[in-house]
Length: 134
Image (cartoon, rainbow, N blue to C red):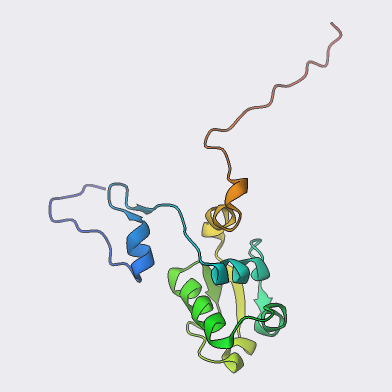
């Protein structure tokens, strides 16, 4: 793709996306999550399996309803979580929806949820043991 001087980066949905956007490469940088977002992602699991809203509601614990819905809608708007409904306005909407983590972000989200376990940038190759007698 050839870029002209008139090329502009795509519009970003939120301030957080704009903050993490790297104009040089047209990609997002490291993902920064709040504590509420991390707890929702841990509850959903990062495998990409679908979770019914009723199960999510049971597992979320003692998080305030308004805070929970706000954090969940933020994750949906950023594209990190995929849902059967685009906007979850109430707990009734939550119960009638299904959620899963977007597979294209799962590795980056796994690093953001557990920053101490970040992958190394370079990959190491294992040496094969020779099967012959020496």
